[in-house]
Figure: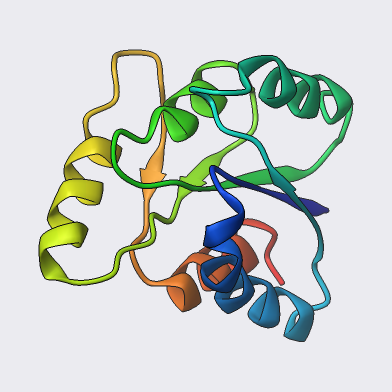
Length: 128
């Protein structure tokens, strides 16, 4: 049982911490990486390949704007992908939601806006 958090940018660290604090409370192990699907697609693929043999895993993607990261992970992994996009204000939220919800076919990405709810969903997936 493991969570792999992939952030599109190091500036997403504070948003990730809002998830990891709850994961710690549930004793769910996690790893965190910074890798942009736009700028470092091979690094993202390496993360996915390194975790392909895990038995129980959930990916959390934290990316905004055009959010290719969530779709890239969802399309290239057999594990659940939860997108939890960061946003600075309501206008930024609308941009990030739209890019996160518009995934192509065969790209299952679940979008959860609240970091606490993201952690809670992970707990329920793992039945903790």
